[in-house]
Length: 525
Image 1 (cartoon, helix red, strand yellow):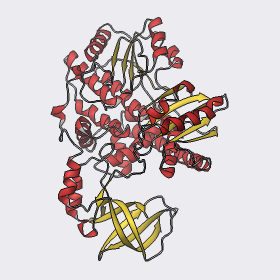
Image 2: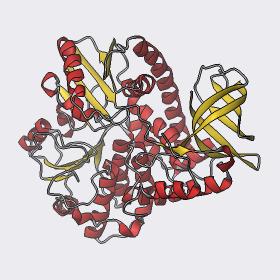
Image 3: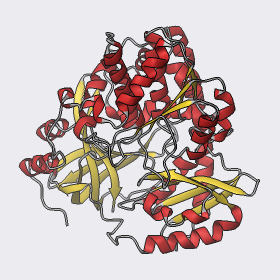
Image 4: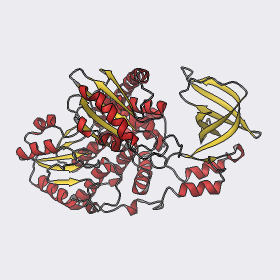
């Protein structure tokens, strides 16, 4: 049962999330603390001096797109021409795969960003063709490491980099910093950091330690950036200052939509736009992709929810020709509705099922699915999200093995709402509260927005709002104190008056020069 909260108790709770305190950019570890960083740097410097052909191989999510963009911008800045490839989700699959090898023929040095740690077969093909391979990745190591010239991945057991949870774009940023030092050149690392911050947020890295420091500095830089893509985005949103929520909920889905619906190279084209006119056109293309994504996702989510077997602890749903680009988002939606981990698979008609899974609560979905690895053709990911494929004939066995594996996990209750920090009285919802909350921004993975519960709240008013009327605007009263509230994407109808328990976050609503406090309602019981 949540305890009644005071401001002092809340401050102590939020402080407890940051065991290492609040770090700044001066606390960033040096590039050489990564295993193989110096080896990789020396090889790239040699390739530049000898005018060798360099090819960058990225990935189609925001992290991979941003990491590719960083590398392209760096080589553009030093005037060295390179090739770059973002695999197509539908034709190529993930990362450095067999289908990519013919496209890098004639390359002397291939560098992966945000992928490659599981590319055992493709690494062998590179070696056979005389291509030196540098892998930069941040994902978990598989049972076998690829044979490469150098591997930079902080999850290697003999790597001295002190932080395990960093993203692919951060490692690319560090590689650029190392190259800058080795080449003795002057470049503005902050210009690269602003894009890196986008990836840290989008890839849901915990916003602690150096991640928090890099995001705060990156957001500050983004808000005054003259980069055409960022200027076009600020112009489109009519926002002068970008925060973590703007990135996570608005910009990241736009960047992701290109790879989900067509080809992620459009996202790189946008980020590397040379002028504001190109940036506006390319941004509109991403907006169009995102609208297509929303429509497709909505349709498949309805079909997936209708196929749920409520007896399953890990929900598995499969459908014919479900769009592979949105199955991950659909899995997240279904997981939230069912309050269980979920895996969504698409039957593409060739005897294989391909899809994504999203966790819920405290479940380490990667560990659970890993127990079924013998049944899978491809598998990768992390605790919160996985990607996989399997033969259609193995589906029944996979379902059964998955439930057995889940049953053996730590029985910590998945539905315990560990993010609710305590019980709050309406009289304590003040600007002092929001001032305290702001001190611990940015919020996101590992540092969730503080959520509170208030019991026996009276609903005075509940009016539909939005174009489709699928949001609600409330007026609540508790112990004589009245506050406004909003709940998004709900079909519920409430009696007035009615007494309920609320779970919510608190924000400041700025409108026409006025600032009011507002409850962002997450649950009403």
